[in-house]
Length: 383
Image (cartoon, rainbow, N blue to C red; front, side, top):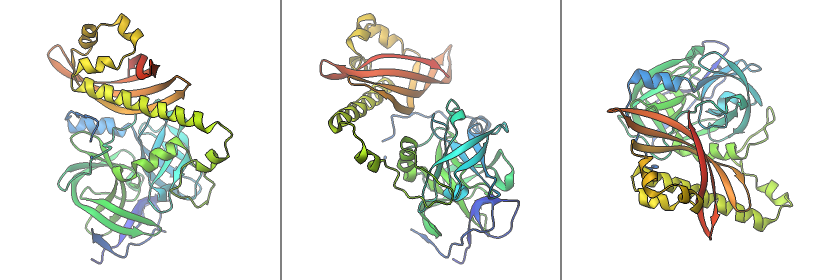
C-alpha cells in the first residue's frame, strides 16, 4: 500500500512524520499492512453523547515519562488504580507521572509491560477508589460501529474525536511490536493519543487501545481489548518487577515464586478451588437476578441469610430493578472455609415512572455450608 505508520506517542512537542501516537520522533516504520463471546447478561443503556464523553473523560489520563520527554494516554480499567496504556509509551521507565482530567498529578508504577504486544499497565495506588471505565470483555466490534477516541493528542488533554470502525482484522508490525486483528478507525488521532481508549459511542464501553496511525489519510489503528484483557489482568493479579531499561516479556505469572514457596500445595489448591467456585457463584447469582429468576437466586443464599429474609422479601428488594451488570469481581481474602469477594455492579432501576442507572460496591462472604458453596453474608453501598 505504501503507507507509513506511526505509533501515536508525543515526545517533547509536535513532530512531523509518522510515529507511534505517543510523542517522539524515534518511532518504528511499518513496512506493510495486510488485511488479514457470552457477555455477562449485560444490558447497557444508551446515553446522550455528551454525557458519555463527560463520564469517560474522568477516567482517561495523560501519562508522562519526564526522563524521556515522552507523553501518551491511558485509562483506568479496574478498582486497583490500574491504567492500561501502550508499551511504547512507558518503555524503559519504572515510574511515570499520571494526570487526571482535573489536572491532579500522581506517581505511577509500571507493573506490567510486553516487548511483543504493545500494551502495558501502570498502577496508581491513590486511584484505587476512582471509578474505572466500563469495558466490553467479550465482543469483537464490527465494521461501521460508531466510536470515540479519547486521549491527549499533541499534549492537549481531554480531547475527543468521533468516527467509525472502518476496517477490522488488520495485521502489521511496528518493531518490536506485532499488531494482530487491529481495528482500523476513521476518528482522527495524533501524537499523544497512544494508550487512550477507543469506546463505543452509544454506551461508553471500552473496546480498544488507540495505538498507531498513518501519516497520510488520517487512518488510525486500535488494539482490540478482548485480545489483551487476559494479559493485563494477569499483571494486575501478579505484578512484574520492572527495572528501567529492562527487557519485559508476556510471562507475568508467578510460577517461579510458587515453585520456591514453602506453603502446603494441597491447601493452596483447595483455597484456589474455593475462590474460583465462589466467584462463579456470585456471577451466576447476579445472572439470575438480571433475568428475574428470584427463586433460583434465593437458593444461592446461606441458611442464616434465608432465616431472616423470606423469598418474597428477597424478590421485593429487586422490585424496581430493570437490569444488572457485573462490572468487576475480585477476591480480597481467602480463609479455610470462606472467601471475601468485592463486587461492583451497575443497575438500571425504575423510580417514579422514570429510569436511572446506579452503581454499587458490594462485599460478600461466600463459603462452605453443608458441603455446598453459599453466599453467607453481604453488605454494600451506592457509589
